[in-house]
Image 1: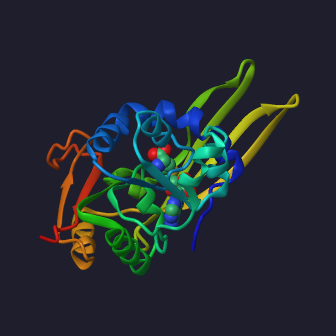
Image 2: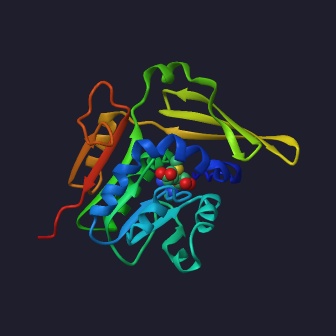
Image 3: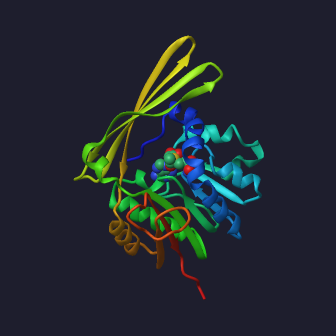
Length: 254
Ligand SMILES: C[S@@+](CC[C@H](N)C(=O)[O-])C[C@H]1O[C@@H](n2cnc3c(N)ncnc32)[C@H](O)[C@@H]1O
């Protein structure tokens, strides 16, 4: 089952996430992109938060996403001659006629895959599109035990203006399910428009992973080699780690 991002979420995505995420993962992914030699693919490219900078730096980068709403925002930032780089496809069964030296799925893309079968198909499909020695990098958050028990209730995680004088606020609530290993996230958006207060809710489940489930999953896939780090500086996992940063590598044909 796919959970497309709604238009309102896509519309305000950059405003919220350039603020929340750029300082966290941007430098790391841009560095990885810069050091890749051939073609690069960003899976779950979204509005191009990372993609646009990479393209401007000269990367031969492609992007795919299941959400038309997110892709539409990305198209609005790209010249028509670059639209061929973007397509509406699913990580589980996407297809290109060429291979990539680096494939990335930044910012929780894999947490949108609920079932074991689609997770394995996604990993193997990525594997099949990598050149020899190619790398796949993705991240998931380290589950916060307190939040897994109590969830979060109406926490304001963004407040500002989307254009001068027009306010926007976002509140987040979460409902964890230990047995399904999911967190149902409710995003509540409120914003000024046409002299009234608009609001919209969007519920989306995220599948959380513990370390050894990630290890088992990758070991069941075609990938022969992987490492899991605890942050975007590639430090080892430790008790304070907030992210699993996973690098899977395809072995060389030699
Ligand atoms: C949190 S956003 C990350 C966007 C971008 N990578 C970034 O770092 O800002 C996750 C993106 O993954 C996309 N996505 C979710 N499930 C997907 C799937 N099965 N295949 C491809 N993209 C998917 C969503 O539509 C969304 O645009």
